[in-house]
Length: 121
Image (cartoon, rainbow, N blue to C red; front, side, top):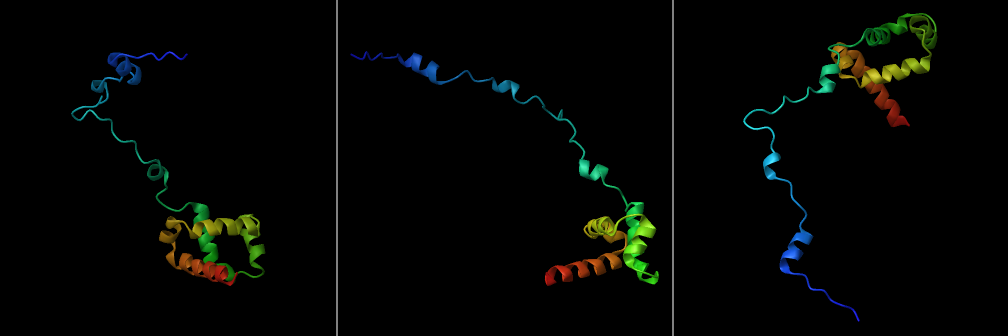
């Protein structure tokens, strides 16, 4: 019938435990030889101030009502953009901390308008 083979204790130990890497090679950096941490990419690439187009958009929002005619036409004349694209850019500026630092009064006013429109929906 079935033949049961008995393994010796040494055979069982070597069969279950795979070869372990040496623990001496795990820590390559000793006594301050660690490499310098990588710079934070988000901090390194973030501009110090708002770009020129963002500044122009905020300035336009501050005084557009002084221009004659519809706002959409003033947007096309001033920026050469469709009204949809202009409002996409403006909405992005409302969430930009650099825009808030540049013109906090305009940004807060536009945020309030956006929030009131969202509540009405």
